[in-house]
Amino acid sequence: MNPDANFKTTWSSIFSRKGGSGETTRLWDDWDDDSRAAVLGKISFEPDELPVLLANSKAGGATLLTTRRLICDAGSAPVREVVGVEAAKFTENRKDQLTELDVELSTGRLLRVAVESGPSYFALWSVLLNISRRNAHRPSTS
Image (cartoon, rainbow, N blue to C red):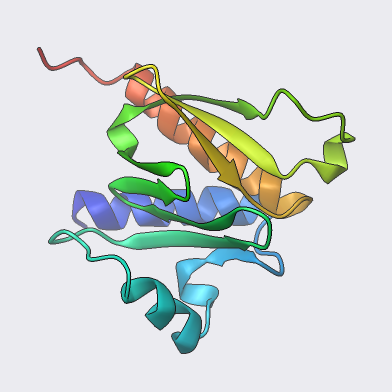
């Protein structure tokens, strides 16, 4: 299994175990052809890059996690740059009403990711935490 396929399998498994698909946040393979085609019309993948999950938030636009990139309305970044993730700080919502995650990048930049509240929110959070922890243990390349 190549590294991209391995990442997709691992992150899909974490997402499913930690809450799974909702109405607007699903594993890529769980979306219908029309929804996937709408995203594919805007994004081109690198060789071997695989889509993992798509969140179509009504409030914050689409978020796509691939085996190499995190792409959202706030911008995009290679997943190797993800070093932290937490709930957006400005909210006064209860835990089950949270809809935004702040993703910290190694460059110091933050990406705000919108996702539906509930189990899918925590499932995506868990995937991003796994990515940030993997990156923390990866040797730096200088």
